[in-house]
Image (cartoon, rainbow, N blue to C red):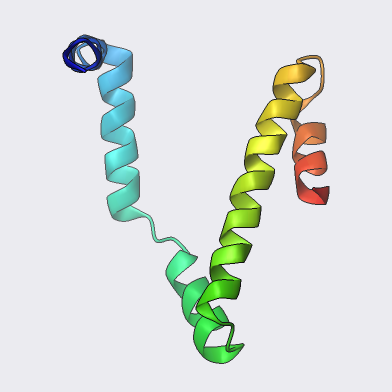
Length: 89
């Protein structure tokens, strides 16, 4: 574990990496997401149960992982086609 933290510390010292980390932190703090609005809409307006909301989230995450595997298997596949396959899954 100590080795991993050392590697993370060394990689953050690279300009490209720490600028990217700063960008993601600033982006997360400044740009609104619609996840809160979606949660409110699905739970309070549509009246989904917490279990159904959790299953929806789980299925989305699993399909993203499958999309990554499909793209990893066939690197000649264009990204847009991998995203289309991901949507269908």
